[in-house]
Length: 107
Image 1 (spheres, rainbow, N blue to C red):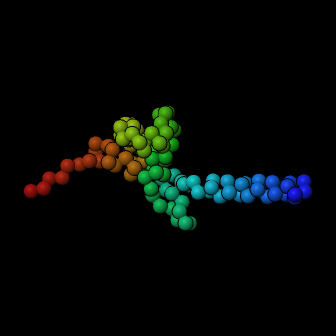
Image 2: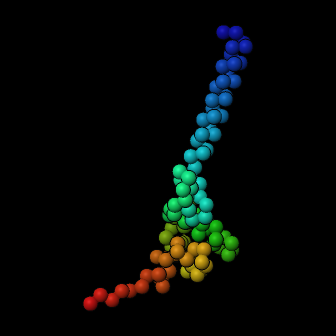
Image 3: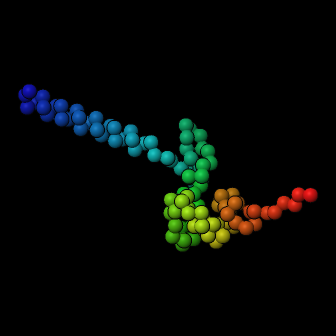
């Protein structure tokens, strides 16, 4: 093979790798607050809700990540007890706050 042909082959391979990397990067979950953007629609998902809860908690000065809230229920419970009154996260914290778990009397 000629040196020019080898260079062209290398350039094409590098371009294909860049395109493949760009396509892989777009597969990441995209959140808009507690909503996940999916197919042109916004839907509430636990993943995005946990990320949003962590975002709001950090605005209050609580050092926590979305992954920590997702994988550690006690972290979520603690954050919800501290900031669950905030209207932005009150819906997310319903099950993690004591007043969200009301006892229902059944005769």
